[in-house]
Length: 433
Ligand SMILES: [Fe+2]
Image 1 (cartoon, rainbow, N blue to C red):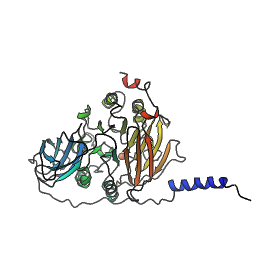
Image 2: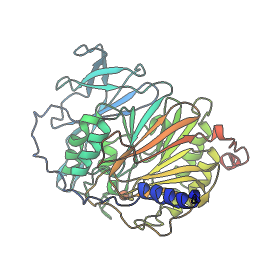
Image 3: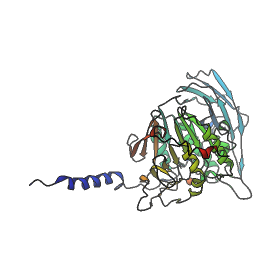
Image 4: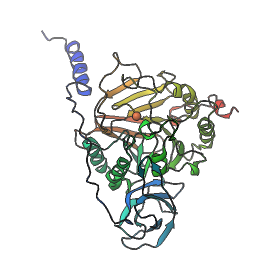
């Protein structure tokens, strides 16, 4: 007699599927903080070069010199060694206890052609570097990794990202883990220069950027001085929150560690910024901030609740497609969610605070998993978001322990606009005074 196979096969398939998603993966331990011999360079030689987007067709080049008289000059062009264009910027510096920073240069250059390699050098000398500008239209690819730090795992994450083809790096907070020791900002700058001088790095702040000392030092002094973002270009009065546009995407960078309640400047700015979004021009709307709102890990459980209560209605009303957060040192992806539950017109929330910092991974998850949590795993890695066109994007998460092309989690995401999620009624909240 032939046995009734489906009854046996179905549970077997379910078990195999479950095993492939979560089990049996032996997580590696944290790796040590990298120790760089602090390599003294000639005092006017540019160090810690990184670039960021600074409004349409413009890029901000940032670097540091020991020599305060070194010019804030960027020479650039589309052929190696031929610098047809120049940009001049300005400088800043800061003191922190017994530490004095070098001279920090910020120079905006442009207008630049889209999707073009530029060769450049900073300060009228030093090695030639190059970067590629993002495209003007889809497809566009973002590398995403937060909570980087500067350990052996950080290096592994950066090496993996370096192997992928992407246009812009998005970093949802916690960069250097300097934690008051300012020279660590310098070593972090050196560690990331190979990548951050070649593609724009768009960052927002985490708790490790605060470095405030009560009654003595305000927060974010090093972060704001070194990692200037296009806040002025996006109508914000603070480097701690801003927005920018790439190809057909509008990206909002919010601050988990600055006021966000209804009476705050950040809240007012966010409302105003969301109202400027033209979904015909930028059909994709993304948001990044540090502390996740949807987190089923015991680490930092509930820390994002107040910000979520204040700001989730705004993001939902505007139809934000995807939210990236960090803080929890693990990876988690939600289904579309709103107000704490699955919602067909909510945003997909991704926690990607697993860039490789010294604190190690957050292993303990709530059990059972919330209904909105689709995939969660405590491993170091990075993500890639390829927005293919106005309706479809492909998201993948890549573990450091695997070769770069291996996708440990992947999903096609359709834009809310193309999913019949017209939120005319919800938009009233944006228009309210
Ligand atoms: Fe954090």
